[in-house]
Image (cartoon, rainbow, N blue to C red; front, side, top):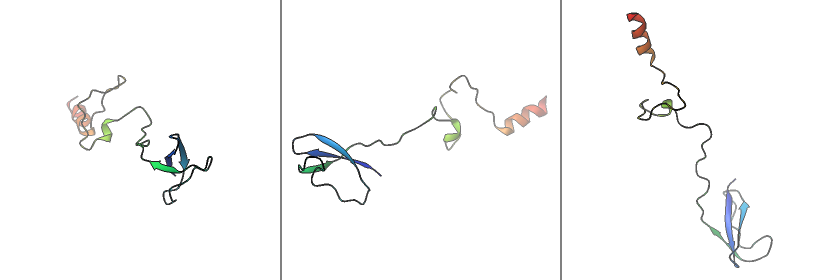
Length: 86
């Protein structure tokens, strides 16, 4: 359920957890003042973890070098070609 922000007549703001289909509040449940829902940026997308990986991209390549000292994994075809030469 999303959290909506409301502004009271006196200018103070409060948040209310409501369902998407719930009607907007017209009065503050605590003070009884008239309120208006205000548009906020919201949380957007929250990424967890260490970041993006080479496998996250459609073409499989990245212009950025591998992070944390990790070498890029070679494709199986390149590994097989090296094995045949040895």
